[in-house]
Image 1 (cartoon, rainbow, N blue to C red):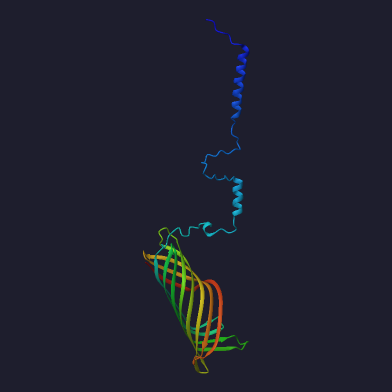
Image 2 (cartoon, rainbow, N blue to C red):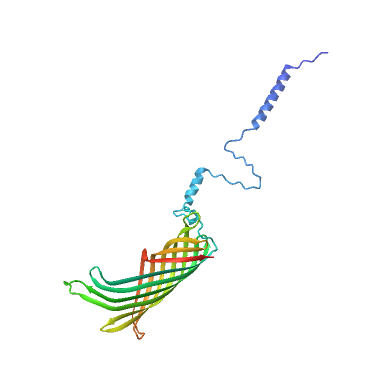
Length: 297
């Protein structure tokens, strides 16, 4: 059998057509550009734009504030140790007592023959509720009694000044009641919560009366005074758990702001004078040390 021979011209034509078709198909498929973003999200999903590092730093710089809010400040871990837990109630009492006695003593070589007796007694019951761990809000009531008697004292400024004054039979007695609101914050020292420190701010109103007696020309005279006081005070101290629910405290006054209004009356009840005093003083007052006991419920 004889196989027919293919025409050379026809073979070249078919080969050229095949190569042209393949080249056209290959040119239609191009690799994705490196700058083209291919989204793989569903059609109904909103695509979030990607923020480059430069854009991110610029946005942070625009949102930067000169003062950070409290929640973004450095955590000093003051409340890391829970000294008192949220929801507890504390019933407490604080007291202080001091005396002063002088028998024929001298003061700076100016005041001679001082004979003095005096005492100060303070009692402060309180009730507090812990709004959160280590933070207490409460009420405090107070009573202060002061008694003093000066039998004799002489003021001598020297022979050159020719000044010599003597005092005798001076006495003072006062009673003061107070009502106040306080906020106290604790910080534990040891991991088991036996020892702690606390700071306190108090706003209080005080009402009191005093009686001052003195001798004039051999006759004993009296002056009565009524006082009102508004104060904002600060204090700090140490707390120790003696028992699981009984805590002992030692506090010391750090000063504050006071406004006083005093009215003086004679023996007949007639107003003979008045004065108003305001002061701001921040200092450690060792005479204001108080020892207290709190019962936690």
